[in-house]
Image (cartoon, rainbow, N blue to C red):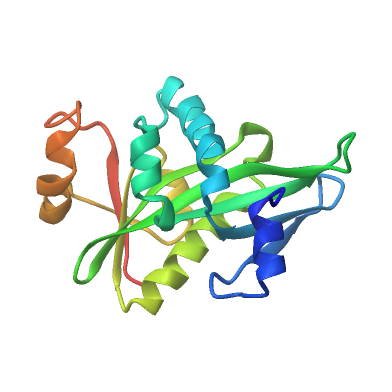
Length: 189
């Protein structure tokens, strides 16, 4: 069995999911690896999203929702030191969910608190935008409690009414519908 998704990608010798890296200079030059999510990531994703949900910064995600949408997620992980030679810690995640012919949503963007403001969230968004471009999707939106972060990454605030496919597929089943308190943002790269 593999210790991490990174090891699995390396041993398989494939780069179809284009793993990439950035260096966090102010944190002992730690390397953050970005890749597509694997089954071994589900519990870590659930724990990360639960932290944000409990703080009121994200809508909750169930385990079944994570399993169903696992192929949508990108992961950010760092190598950790440990007694058995170390391992990898999931420090961030983000998903790109295709909503309609020319429309996709960035969902569940979360970065562990000690690693925020280190460009991890920005790189996760970039990965989603690259994938959207691959699928020739030119409108990418998010519903967020942190619109300033998305604005800093080129998004613009829009009215939720511009997203009827989202509203009538997902939002209608949300506990906050029709009184959604998230802000809709969109980018058309």
